[in-house]
Image (spheres, rainbow, N blue to C red):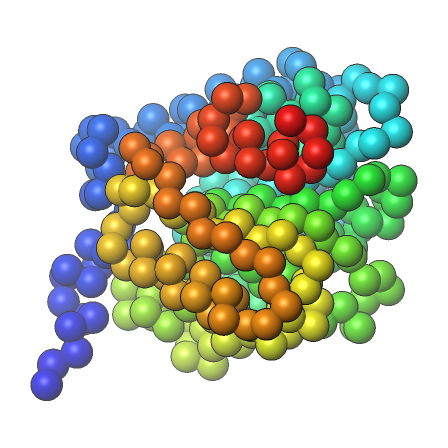
Length: 292
């Protein structure tokens, strides 16, 4: 009765680049980083930017704000949490979605956090929670607060939705959240290469798994429109993570959640395409914000 998860097929399930139909695994990752960097450079040329705004004391606790040149009073704000398996990427590649959104009068905030090995899972979750508190305090005049996270960032966004805010000075009212190709149950990654720099124990993985925190999400985020999005060519395990989390939310009374299975995408271009105003998920987000 051998546990399948210790075999290499399991390792493959958590290597998203191996499931892309567009190019080889190494190339898809290189191309991903290039696309995010180029999109972010473009956004920095289009928006007014406030870069490296501190949200905490730590060196890594900084965020970038992409401000539209708008006179409108109806200004929604989207916080973007980057992916990279909690150990790669940074806010420096995370402004790309501002490209179509600044034209529509939407503020985008790209949050930095201490990726492993510098940060551990508890630290990262605490950091992104505090980044939201800071944004709410600084931008109290916005018309609505939205979250978008990709991969590990979708996990962190789901943890934000599952926060008990009583320990903080504010209670953020998050109107909508896009959870894109995320991981919501951390237990299956404990035995994979992903956990090497994270060094999570089972206890740490459990307390940081959104799948375990649905009752708290219901208490904190019942007014939030939640979109769980997955790529057609995500690995079966990644797709299962999205499907299972969606089912857990969907079967909880009083939550608003939809599942989006995005055709002709893989784990990487499902988020890269948010640089495009005509892309399905960009359109959904604009519609949710009343900006389409």
